[in-house]
Image 1 (cartoon, helix red, strand yellow):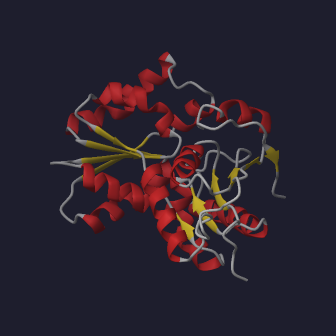
Image 2 (image 1 turned 30 degrees about the horizontal axis):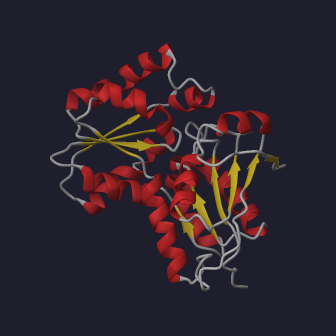
Image 3 (image 1 turned 90 degrees about the vertical axis):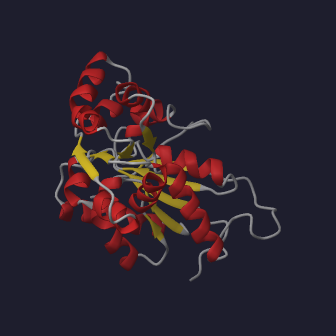
Length: 273
């Protein structure tokens, strides 16, 4: 059955970081409703095996489809790296990841390189960003490094903690030494650390957040399929956003408000058994 224009855009992340993508989608597509699932019971995905991440992603993707979404945005770099192909082949709606859009933005922004990529251990080990960048620019030099402590720091709300600044300095030392001119934030949590990252790298280094580019891709796919909510004469109803967490919805509510321009007033709870 064909999805309706009024159906929500489904999206998921291992936690709250994907709200940066939700924010970009809301700005670019203000008429669209969103259904966001944060898998806070199983965060972080980065250290988990590819098979486990694929299993989690399929559970969530199938649940989103049952909830009636018209497309699925994998707002998690690790899940995109390990599960995008299987989600695209298994779900009856279009599925968009965040790696390819981020790679496109990095190639456009880089002047002489090299291009730096930071992410979770799983994302970096997958090589997904390096392959995506090389598909777009075969001669690009890519330096990729895992930063596994960044996600728990963001989840704890320690964006400007002294310990965070020390960890950032240690993790980014190879990027500074290599004189990267572009740094891809290869995890949707990392934009919450952008001020600290920018201060460490200096004004000459461009930070790449794939959220905006992902929103452009979602808009293109929905338009191609006639699924934009304002496609029928521009008289779309007010959007309705739902936020769901698999654990600690109160913590999600408190921390998630930092990610969104719009008010976050309620978080539902759903757990997979």
